[in-house]
Image (cartoon, rainbow, N blue to C red; front, side):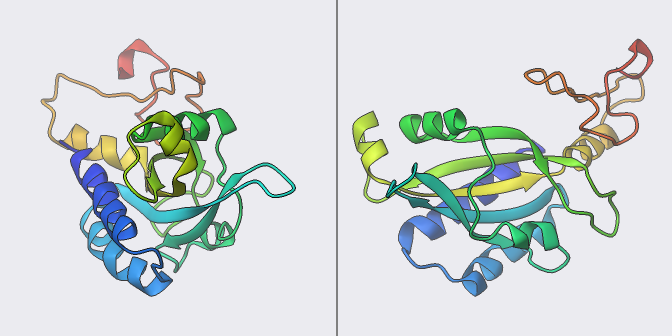
Length: 193
């Protein structure tokens, strides 16, 4: 149930961006604000646009990220290519389903250390309503995403657990536990997980 608000935020932003081809930074800020203020596990909300191949390879360019204040690292990403392996984005475009990307660098906030890694949940946007893989590839128009702070998700989960249970977080695909520096969340010994 702790992942429901981020998934609902993703779908709300997807609805906004699917219904309007030109969402301004102010419109995104207004739509994202209640999600970001009401759900501390959400770090950021944003979207990108698909830049078809011209002379180079096609790529997803980040257009807007919220919140903008205190997010120098996130704001600096505006206009840059989506920082994901091309295979992940290609698979997401083909399937039309949400994807998860671990290891998203996060800027420091008042209550978190710099250099922590987040988890991005994203979904590709399409112009029209494609029903086949070929149509999805042809009609790709952008990407909407939310970024989570995994230590906040786990802290919320941990608060509701009985004392005899424990949680830990491990990136099974990358084998990176060090990317998640929050104390007590790593699976490095039997005593904490």
